[in-house]
Image 1 (cartoon, rainbow, N blue to C red):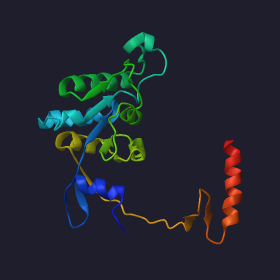
Image 2 (image 1 turned 90 degrees about the vertical axis):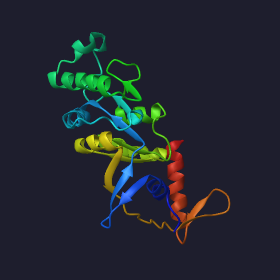
Image 3 (image 1 turned 90 degrees about the horizontal axis):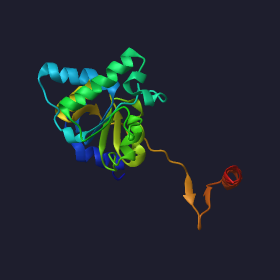
Length: 205
C-alpha cells in the first residue's frame, strides 16, 4: 500500500520517535483562544520561557465573546470570568505576540477553528493544533490537525512540537467500482445502488 496523505504529512514533520510509538511532531500552525491559553502562557512566564515561534500563532477570543451587545464594548462582558479570560488573552498577545490576533470587537474575530481556514492560516500539508477539540475538522483542508489540552498548548508554545502517537490506518474495502461513464454500481447489487441513487437525486432536486 502506498503512503496516504496522513503518512506523508506525518513523515515530513516527524522529529523523532521511540520504540513504543511515542513521537515528537513539528507543528506548523498554532491556533490560540482565551480559554486554554491562559494557564499555558502563565506556565511559560513562571518557567521564564519564550514562545518558540511567534509566527506560528494565530489567536482570537471566541469562547467567551457575546453575540450581542458589542456596542457596549468590554462593558458588555457581564460575566467576570469571561471578561478576565478575554482581557488576559489581550495581555498575553501584547506580551508574547502572534502572527495575527483577532481580539474581541475585531471585525475578523470569530470561532477559532473557523478563522484559520478563513484567513488562509490553515493550508494543505500543514500540522495544526489548537486547544479546541473541533480542530481535527481541519483535516478537510488536507492538514494534519489535533485538538489539544492546556498542558499541550504550553508545550507547543515552548517547543513548537507535539508529543503524540501516530494513528493506525484502517482500510475500508467498499467493493464499489466505476462503470463506464459516471454511473457507479456495486458488484452483484447494482439495483440497490440505482434505487438509492434515484432517492438521493430526488432529495437534492
